[in-house]
Image (cartoon, rainbow, N blue to C red; front, side, top):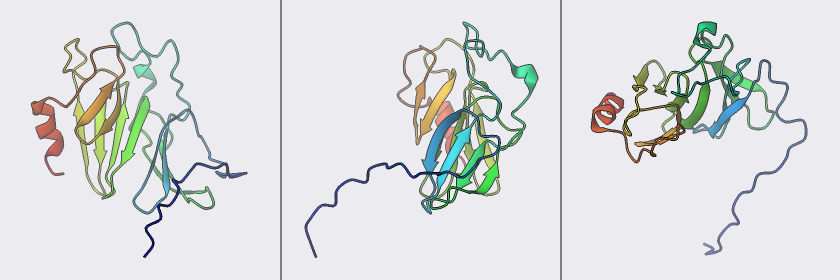
Length: 172
């Protein structure tokens, strides 16, 4: 056995990768699943711009309905082709994604102020209130375990309030 430490993996450009991805919009997050395949969370035809939210963090284009294309794409790591896709009609403004080692997928939608835990056959969600209290969700931008970050300009959340942690952990 060698005690040598391997150098850290570094990103490298792969020409013509990924393959053509239909309906790919603003990419809001990328993670890697337990088998090493990249998973992309994107906005399809939806664009986050100056008109997306008002001063009180309310999404302004809700009447357009959820995004009509699959927003979660799992790619073949070698070829860059889509091997699985889903999420059509579920999200308004995708933002963050984390794939856990056991395969559950955590997603955030800033327009709905929600954190989603997607499992093989079930979905758990939590819709946070859009208040001005430091413990309220407001434009959730990321989630990992029991830590979130809040992109609204409100004080950063250190942990989920107990009432939310309990609800998110049920069935985990």
